[in-house]
Length: 196
Image (cartoon, rainbow, N blue to C red; front, top):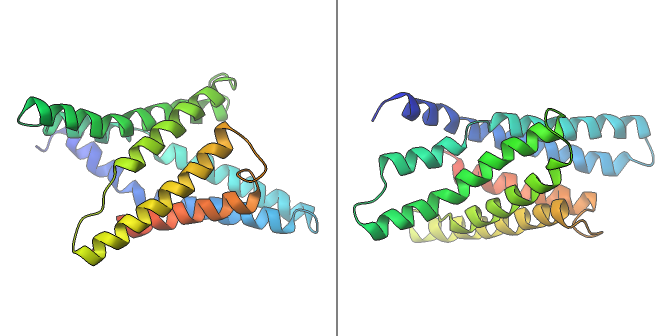
């Protein structure tokens, strides 16, 4: 269990912390842009550039993450047909999300046709929502309760972010709503991924 794919999965897993940090930058800069947009347009432009580059950077950090789900299926598909089906269902959402997230990133940076961005964004956001709903916390009862509350908060925040992307509306697309949702999602991820 120490072949190239295993090593690649371990390497990519270490990016989760970086991803959460850059996600924090992305949404703090979104709030910063909103705050100074009318009073200091030059600073607002810099905040917006920071937000966009952080968002694109996060997608670049996640290159190859779909292999985590693939490797879980490859290494432990389940002893019975029922467990195999459950394993496929548990890992398929993450695989699809990260796979289509790559195409979304490539279309946003101009490597692929920009028209693909909306379609890839819809698929990626839907799969992320499904994936987040499957995740569960582990540990003592109190810790498990906190983990579940953090997961619920992250799910709601991710739903708002996904809705803003696929069905723009004044509430979800407001800079404050997106900024707070992004920070809640990032900080819930920090909490869940922090080493004990």
